[in-house]
Image 1: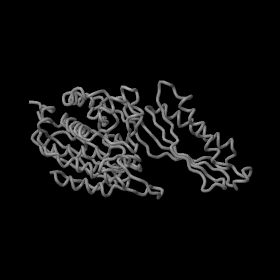
Image 2: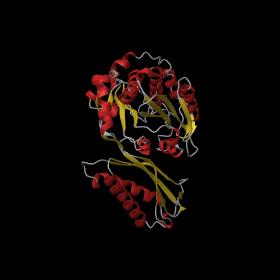
Image 3: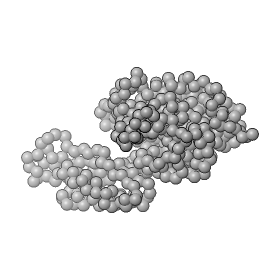
Image 4: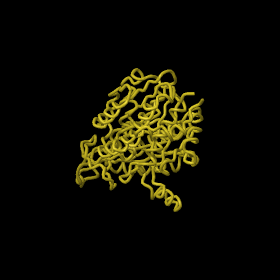
Length: 419
């Protein structure tokens, strides 16, 4: 008899009372990418409660929990646990008040402004349910706790640290992300869902001079300003309106004081796409604009380009979608809905690529339903609803945690459930 996953999830009886205190502890004590030592300790301490093999650390501050339960397929489920340099502006009693050093040495408020604390708590809840109900499934479940997603280095760091030799090879990889939407909705789709992304650091070279003598300088700040203006025309005038691309200038640095024209300026861009043809065209256009402006201003050295924080396109495997979506429909009913592609980016897909495994990555809505419905009625969901990376972002805990935990277990049992 095939396991009735919907019925099981409504009757499993596993004590998840630890889950919310664990979530609130993570939320109150966030750590930036590459600094997650305390977070890893909290994760490992929780994992010791379960009958699982703990593989830690991997890739800096990552860990895996391996639950072996007889013959069957291997399912990998990934969560992430780094935070952002954002000063929290919520009024919950467990709000973060931490200050931490950024990579440039400056201090910043730190906050789980992207929901990674929810991802981690949900995966811990999945492990608790699967460990407590081993009679319902067979195979191997790997819970992967990934650091440094925000700078797109964590997945590759775990892979480079020998992940493939430290855990069983997965037959399928799964993951999820909380995003604005009705709290508790589970949004799935096959094909491209999260955009590919790159960051580009561009160094512009000028010639320094006293601020009172601009004729003796080649001003890289002026060059940077002209480039910023011209870059905005690339998407608007060189990309087919039916296609998608983003070119955002996120940082501009130049100079140290008001009366010195600096020798260099730096721009940091963030670019996103859904196909490689558009990406190649955009990158060629960026180089053309930057090099032409430098030449027009008489820059003494050509500009320098550094690509970093690469995130691959998340392109969900149709066969995994077809296996999991019917289960979600049974478990969540009207709250199992179609996803739409998002311009956000993720490094999740590096993990299934390392194992040549098919995968599915889905979205959990996390906005209080009354807030979402009111904003939707007014046509203002893009204005009135807090979004990831904002200081007021905070998932509606109960429906979001419940859906995220159940979705992970349901998707895993679509492959591991006993018949």
